[in-house]
Image 1: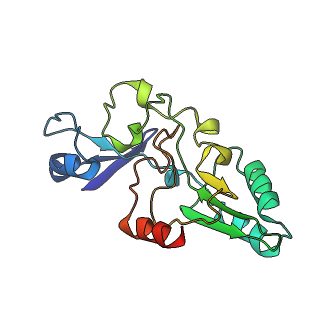
Image 2: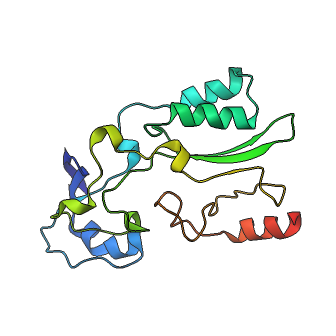
Image 3: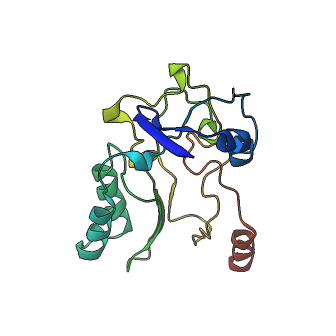
Length: 187
């Protein structure tokens, strides 16, 4: 697999092996490609810049409770989050707990649920990301939980979004057996 160039849809690759195994990578539903097909792979992490340190700095040096931190993070992430994906679990001395997914989630024109988990036809523009300045979803549209009724938060690298998720971020993730067991023990 080798990168040819970067397009507005991400890096462009040409690889017979990648094309033949694309169904395994995305769980099926792959269109039939010609042997000479080019695939572009889009990911929010391709955007320039990294905001991760700013959020950790706010956690480290700020005097925020959970609710204050979430509000400040939402303000800072109104144009999306750029950085590596983080399951951020929060707690403060006031007894508040919270979970936020910091993830560079792309904002697509087509809002079909789970669309980011599929290999899509690149010859049509309806699957494109929205224009550059709004290409990432605002942080307040990503998965989160503040003071859940059950009284605890369990991530365990498992699904944190409901089945009726409004965007792809975390929607294709499965509940892990470890997460199920932790929830049984804690509940």
